[in-house]
Image 1 (tube, one colour):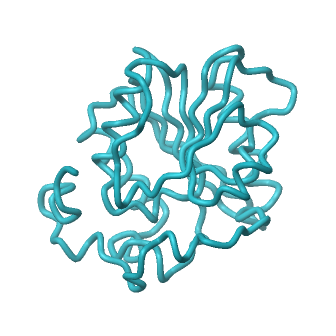
Image 2: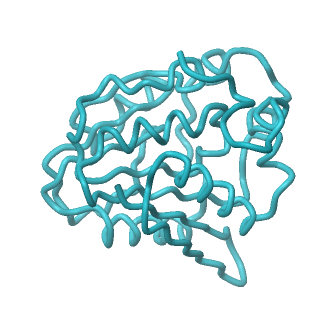
Length: 210
């Protein structure tokens, strides 16, 4: 099953990836939440990043997915595979070609073939990963060479389920943490972007290349 959460990054104690609510995540996500977790401006920023980085006609992985994927509506993809925690949410997502229910904190190994995707997105959920480097290594494994991994987040979260280290950092520092995850997982050409409107939800992005 891989390393313990505290071994994810050198220099971070085991408690860095603990959560206030230690109950199984499956219990927390047992009922669907048909809401968006960021406002329209932040959604537009995510959608633009996907438009720029995820190739039309390609096979796309939507990691920690839900009932919406924020992919551009006017772009057709060869396939979109969603992996998330709630079957009702995933089944309601019209962009998904197929979907899988999996708790990545229990099992970070993706049941997907090597080099089978042309891009991947992880939207406003990275803060809940207790084994992020293991998960990111799996994303790298299933991406084709040169494919992009787009990770986005805002300043919202379920605080009892976000890992401890996340809650002690600011947005730019959280970008640095995700960049460290990506570097440890073998990603290259890691870029940092942000959409910081005077009003509304901020959005930070970390984009790596396989």
